[in-house]
Image 1 (cartoon, helix red, strand yellow):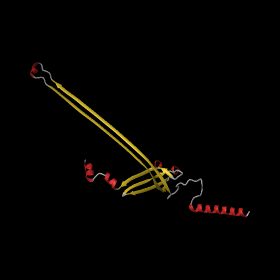
Image 2 (tube, one colour; image 1 turned 90 degrees about the horizontal axis):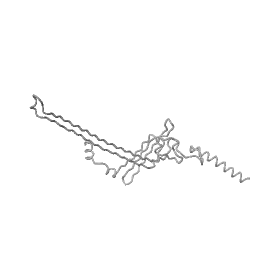
Image 3 (cartoon, one colour; image 1 turned 45 degrees about the vertical axis):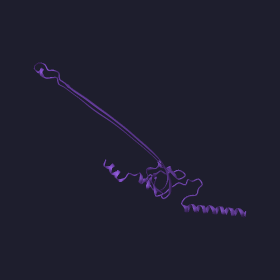
Length: 193
């Protein structure tokens, strides 16, 4: 009997302590609850899966042809002394234009973002920035947008295609990006011509 009382007391003490701890942490302790971001300041992982493809094809073909001719024959009567006069002309104008543009882009990464606000519809406004620097080369990822709470998965992640008003920026700085950029003289000549 004494052992049951001790075990019962320990169990009651554990329940009171876990309830107090849960209240201090601001959330309930449950084995079945999802741990999802649900308020300002909480973090969320964005799975960036962006694939873009654009294609544009334009063809123009113009052909213009004109043929003129004037012919006079020998006159009759008093005008018989005029010789035969013939005027002929031909004008041809051909133009053919062809253009094709194709662009593809793929960006796959993970970015940790933070809930910075809630809009009037109850959706979360998120912002995230990630800077990676390796050997004086910087890769900078910036993400902003809004996400519906129901689009956040149980593991606290959201796909980038579920973010509306999304702005995803990826840029690099360093020797490689400087080498890919045209020189000042080349850019000046491209601007002029």
